[in-house]
Length: 271
Image (tube, rainbow, N blue to C red):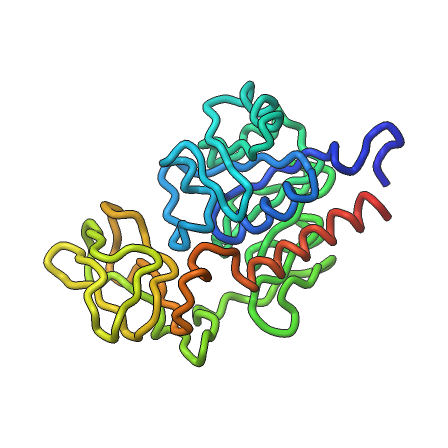
């Protein structure tokens, strides 16, 4: 239970990462009037860029479903950004800003499939998303990120299900809907997010190698033009349902995970 002099919406929440899942969590928590701050690398490589606050690193600001994240250059700008009703995001891959913010909650939403340095001592409540964390050891709680019956479940002891390496099924397609680099080099985009594609249609180039869609649908995610990639790297994904609006809205999976995070925070501080 939080102290009598502190309200729930005074809680400071620091989120490591600003990709699709981290964005869904930040969006839900900011909508609930928590004070949310995010950290990212200097060169994030989100695929679902239209629903990733990490785009603010490149564009200064990024709006997702009515909520805006704003890149700030120093911790001193965080408070003013909150006053603007926006989520501050800093280039700070090691989340050193935690020493300045002293967050009530730290959420590792990098989804690296391993722990990149998050510790249970980083905040009164530390939450890890997906595999790579052990609830009760390096974090307090883990949120299940694997599609299926347990998606979004709060794990109080132990680990999330291991990474299967198989993309979630959409309309019966799994790996087929993923666009991958045919070789290493610089990615040159021809198509953009929201564009429709046919089977084997060219989406871009990596060096002299054509990047093609293996199925028909709409491009839901695509790396930024000019990104250096390696052979087999995920460049994008195609949604076979063909609904363009899905490219610009938070997915069902991400919403479920964000709901698990919100519940975990409320149970901890409002129990």
